[in-house]
Length: 632
Image (cartoon, rainbow, N blue to C red):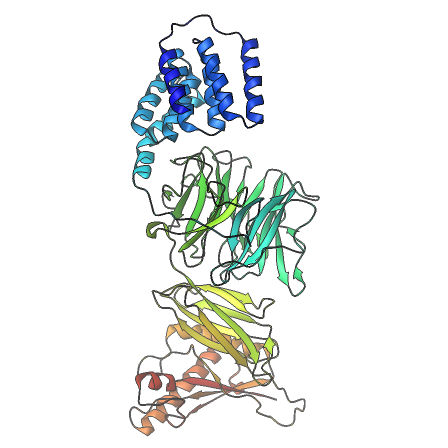
């Protein structure tokens, strides 16, 4: 068919121009063409159009219309043929000239596209918005050509029938351990839940408690899976066209979504939320006044139980056009988003930017063919940084509409690796699961992270490679447990830190006459001394604070601090060292305001090893500090 059309073009281009066809005849041609297209008689539609082009060889309007029909099919090659003829018939038509450039660019004929765009710029009024847009395109064309000529690895895989349907699925987000939510459009927009299994996903089910008769979409789930942010548009009681809401996971399911309030939401549209890994910074899109373009990306931080006034991410991220779909990776450094304004191959392309000390790095196009000629977006990268998820209707294995796909990320566009700690708390005597809380402290920065058990009685928290953490686990009515986590520099979520902590119930004697010891010694895993010395290291201060907090919470308890050593050196020296170390902890607590009368200390030296002193690892573990807690 194309060869036949091309012969007609070659013949008809040489025909002298005559009288221009009137609008009435053009309307008739358009109506008949639409009738053919509606009946799926595409070949017949173009055969008819070509006869009209032969009949009215000087009518650039008919040829231009034929180009738009070819573009809708879509047949980019045929559309370009028509536009070439329309441009020949009327080379001063600015719209046709620019459309021909876009067609050449779409077909990746960049040398000709640049030549055509330069010619088009000569036709445009330099004060017009189209000239500004065309000039930006011209300046960026070399970047776009380089992206196309240096393709990245891209082998997308459909997530399968458990997730995808004949309807549109889009906006995927997963928690640390593979729980995914996404939007599906069927009559209305609703959220669905699925969970990653070994090599596939479980059957997607509606998100009960969140979905209503209104539209719910554009959501994100927190890394621990405990809460989600969703977008509701034109909802009762809302502030504007679209607002952002939050819902929490409870033992009874998801709570009713709650509007985040006027600190976030306005009379404009707020949508497409993405929450930082610590749950403290919310990124979202808004078309409110005061931005750089049609839609901008903003952020707000959660402080003192309130969301702060949103802050625009600035002109490094936001452009004159539309910047949307932010996704902050779990490394809390890498931002992915889609944009029309940054140099790209299609209408929307996906970009990434790294958080710097001040602001954001220059956005990087993540490459062709991940980015193509269409509206790319709806993009998510898992905690490992290796697998990306996105929505598309461009592949033959689609189940219908937009489907969710995954692919392995090229190395140079991956986020920083992160891993996570996952733990459960149990009663030591009954083995029953406990509800509780952990406090993670980054020893270098002092940043504190708190999290509570979810409905599965698990606690999940992201942690960074090459970082030391002091961890304290607590449950109401139980003694605490501490742990020291030194994360390897190459750690990833493929090998998370998994713990089960057994806590002892606090037994407080009701009689005030006798002091009774009920609890076993608690190992203090975050008390550190200089080698061979009883001088406390600075990083011990977090464990000291844990002891202070406990003593303040239970004013009727006393603590005996017990020091232990390995068997290196003389027994008498080890007794003295262990006593001095225990005393140093006592003095640190007194310096924090604890009554010294509630404290005692003891040195056991090398007498009570927990492990063999024949190995370096065993000796290290035997050098320890413990507390024994008693109640009056």
